[in-house]
Length: 130
Image (cartoon, rainbow, N blue to C red; front, side, top):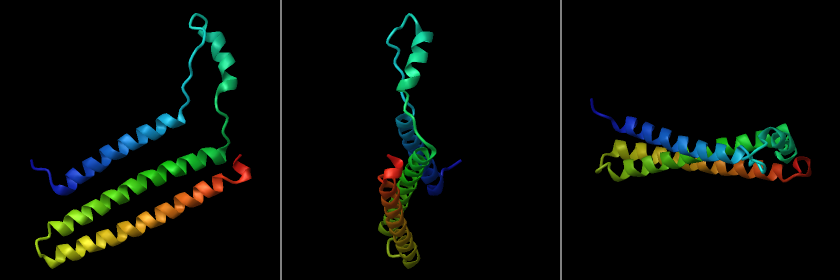
């Protein structure tokens, strides 16, 4: 059974998304350290005040940032695929035009994703989120 280019690309993208989501999820979950190792139950109650308190708008803004990061990574992968397709076209006009199309749409996607990220970051800087 041979692996096609699309299958290899899919597996690579899936692995990259897994690494990105793992790194992003680790920053969302607070780490709890017990100051008193002998009495963990009492320190669990005392540490409740130290946990971060976030409202739904803040949580949704963080989720949107993660989604935009993942889609930005996918757009960069598409940009790379389009560039490789154009380089390896060997004068085939069909492959060159297909590569140009992929490059065009991936650049457009990157611009839209960057603008969306700027809007989300700008909105989260408002006094409502503070």
